[in-house]
Length: 258
Ligand SMILES: Nc1nc2c(ncn2[C@@H]2O[C@H](COP(=O)(O)OP(=O)(O)O)[C@@H](O)[C@H]2O)c(=O)[nH]1
Ligand SMILES: [Mg+2]
Image 1 (cartoon, rainbow, N blue to C red):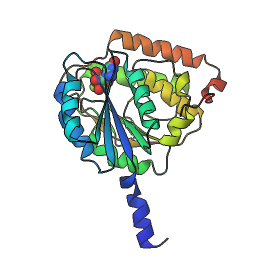
Image 2: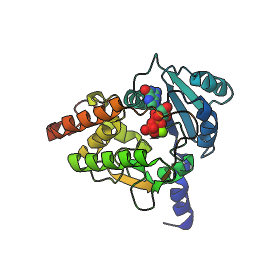
Image 3: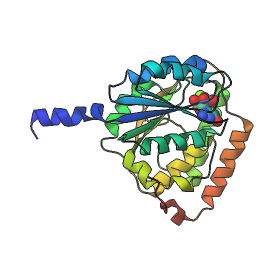
C-alpha cells in the first residue's frame, strides 16, 4: 500500500456519515454548548436530539438551533418514555436514513465529545466501540463517591452475571457500525430504562460482533440534575436476572430491524 492510500485509509473515518444520538430530559442548560461541541468534531457529523417533552423546554432550544443548522435534528416524544426507548427510537431514525456510524451519548457533558474522532477511528476495525471508563487509560474526573460506587458495582455485576468481556458494560457512550444495528434484533429488546445498555451489549456480544474500547474520562454533569432513580436501579437488577435466565439462543437476532 503506498503512502497516499494509507493516509486516505487512516483518515477515512472523518468522511463517515455519522449520527450522534443525544437523549434528553430537562437538559436545557447543556444542550446548546454540547451540540456545538459535537458538530465541531467533524463535517460529516450530525446530531439527533431525542427529547421526551422536557418540562424545561429543551426541545424549544433545539428547535431554535435546528432552524440555522441543518446538521441538527430533533425527535420529540410525547412524554418521559425512558432512556432505553429513546436510544431505540434514535437507532431506528438513523437506520431509516443513510448514516454509516451511529453514536449515542448523554446530554450532560459526562461523555466528552472530543473522544468522538477516536471512537470513529476505532470503528474502522470494529463493529461496536465503547467510550470506556473502565479500560486502561479510562476513568472518572469528579463523580461523587456514591455514584462511582454504584457504577462500579453495577458494571462488575453485569459483567460477571452475563459473562460479558468489555470492561465498561453500563455506559451509554457507544459507536455502532450501521451493520451492527441492522444485525441486532432491536424488536427483541425489553428494557426501557437505563439497563437497556447492558441488554444491548448482551445482544451485540451474543451476535459475535467485534467490540473495541476507547478510554474516556467521565465527568460529572455540567448543569441540571440526574434522572437516575431507585426505580432504574431495581429495573437494572430485574434486567440482569431476566437475561441470566434467557436461553442463549435468544441472543441471535430473529427479526433484524432495518
Ligand atoms: N429522552 C429521554 N432521555 C432521558 C430519559 N432519562 C434520562 N435521559 C437522558 O439520559 C442521559 C443520562 O441521564 P442522567 O440523568 O445524566 O443519568 P446519570 O448520568 O446516570 O446521572 C441524559 O442525557 C438525560 O437527559 C428519558 O426518560 N428520556
Ligand atoms: Mg449523567
